[in-house]
Image (cartoon, rainbow, N blue to C red):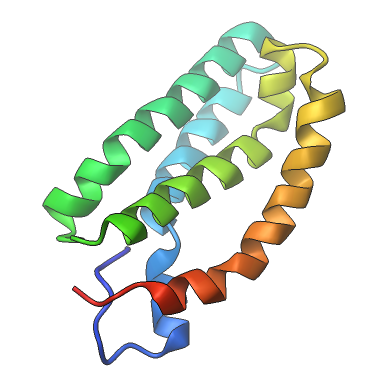
Length: 131
């Protein structure tokens, strides 16, 4: 579960609080159910997957602020962007079924973005003010 960053948190605690584990867990649960229907209806599976990504990304800022008490816009933005990056990366098959040919251009760039994002975690976490 993600919570607000405190002044006493060390770098590892801050990084842990930046990862959207609860949102990613919910998405992976939906993805596991959808994968059962991939063979019967790939388009339906893709639509549900993309819909789940969009719904979670829309709800996530409100969830962070109202339920978890995260007041930092930078932290919330980072959590949402991290969720979007990883969920789209994990859903390559479904997205390719919905938008054929997207894998030739989007996914190589996405794979590079995942690596770059991983290296950006530490400087971004260090820049976030507690509270």
